[in-house]
Length: 127
Length: 311
Image (tube, rainbow over all chains, first blue to last red):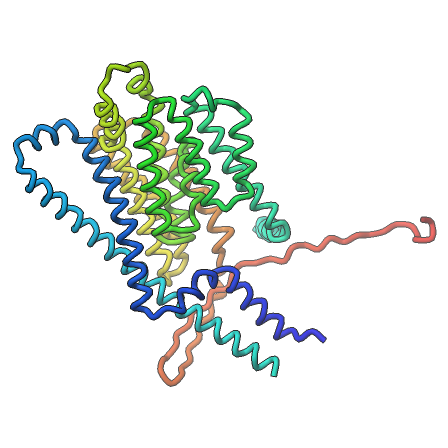
């Protein structure tokens, strides 16, 4: 005979596994510090590409004035300016990634706890 | 009101019953509209200006995840822009890549907004999107709306100034690159709208999360007012009052759309609020439970005339 409680719990667990759990369950396998480190690495990679694209667009935008300025500036000064801008950009981007990653990890933790409770209840229903 | 609630229940029931079909049809309609707009308004490259292409791509996109469908649309757009020169295509590709970087980091799963925002702009109803997204998903979803707005303004500027890029073979390629980028960076109205959208989505998502009565309704009204006033003040400061009537009409239509969204997703009965208090070992709980307004769909009664023996 069909056990209604069992079916209900299994359905809820399956909905979680197929939906939010697809990302949350693998992410829940990491320690918080490891998860944050991965987020920072990803952020560093994509942030660097985004900076490259933005810098390219800005250079193309001010091509005329930049050419005129570059002639009078020390090349070392240009490199230092570019490096400082990059560091500022990447730090700001990584801070945003960090806050976002932390929030997602916390949310995942809560959802996985609920999921684990469901699994325990299911186990009891089968005993 | 009961009639409306009944219609809502029936509609939700119908969509739930035919979920896969409803999703595929809505994806097809969205993508076909986007492809046709690219085809008719930005068809600069004669070699791909064939009516069968947008329809074929839209059919394929209907069966793909929205994110991949949007990437396919971007590829089709770049192909069309190639008619204006490699410089335009390269800048557009860089801009789209930036959009995808931001989209995948901050609003994954909201790819449809990248396609929907320029479409909403074409139909003059973009002002509904920041409020709707602030209500449904939070401020993060404003990112694809903002990126979609940047893409729309860029494409609009390209459409208005194709002579900048076509027929001037003698022009220096670097100067052409510079001219394309200037279309984006020098567009003050675009930055104004992007800022207003971001502010609106933030305010709406903050108000929505509060536990005050009618939080969604209040968020909608405040959001629409803030958005309209910010853009109006910005236009005054920029000294360009073009499109003010469109802004006002668009805001009123957006208000209507937002209220319909609220009706479908967050219709609560504040007259039946229940407040309960209880405690456990660690906390006191003060719970306010607001019931949803629902109505059961009317059941169809089938009356049979005549006896079965006649068959």
